Image (cartoon, rainbow, N blue to C red):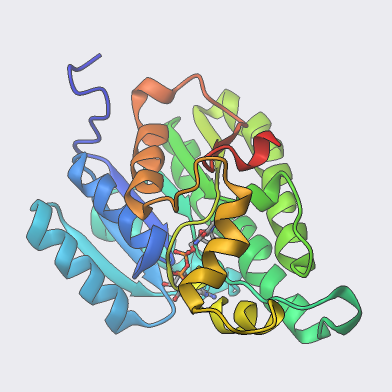
Length: 267
Ligand SMILES: NC(=O)c1ccc[n+]([C@@H]2O[C@H](COP(=O)([O-])OP(=O)(O)OC[C@H]3O[C@@H](n4cnc5c(N)ncnc54)[C@H](O)[C@@H]3O)[C@@H](O)[C@H]2O)c1
């Protein structure tokens, strides 16, 4: 085992939703560890900019691709294109995700489909698309960015909680199939990470708490009270965990939902 035990030199990684937030941090940490990186996101230009920044900082090859993870056929075509452009696929970080907050009785049907199609169906489609490439090499790493909400629930997030619990189940099922093929599949389960996904909830939270507070105070009340660490998680921490799970050092970790939540799920 190399002295730097997260050595991904010569590997090729795909990160979905890699233009910003946790996905951008994961893409950067994978490249810092030596991997070339394909950034998948809705907007091809934004994915390209994110890839360009990674290439400038790390010197690794990085490219952006316009991919909507709800489209199984597009994912297949783009994964095949990455295998062609980069010479194979070693790692997939299934990170693209969205949130919508409303009580069950008022939750719009189309928002249910919106959240579950991206947060769960997209993970399945991408897993299916990379699988033959990894199986052919008898090696692969899939890291699903689930959530603490893959392990415990919060009110007003029924679609998100259901989808993330589904991701943990899919992680376990695909890990069992992957093991004989040299493919590991794990889930990371972050608590609150200060990205757009969390910040966008601030106005609604202020309102639900009856007003009279700043958005930062509302975010602290909603999220920090859940985390015994009383601190938001940095996207880089989640990115580094993803990189570790892609390394040879993590070869015996399989089918595991791994908490990175300041103790939230320990309640
Ligand atoms: N921020 C948190 O506190 C937190 C906690 C636990 C889990 N997560 C999970 O981490 C992942 C990343 O979240 P984030 O906080 O970085 O959010 P973010 O909103 O900052 O980034 C999400 C990214 O996904 C992309 N995306 C959205 N829909 C897509 C689609 N259909 N196809 C391809 N890309 C798409 C967006 O364009 C964006 O780049 C999500 O799966 C989220 O559920 C976040």
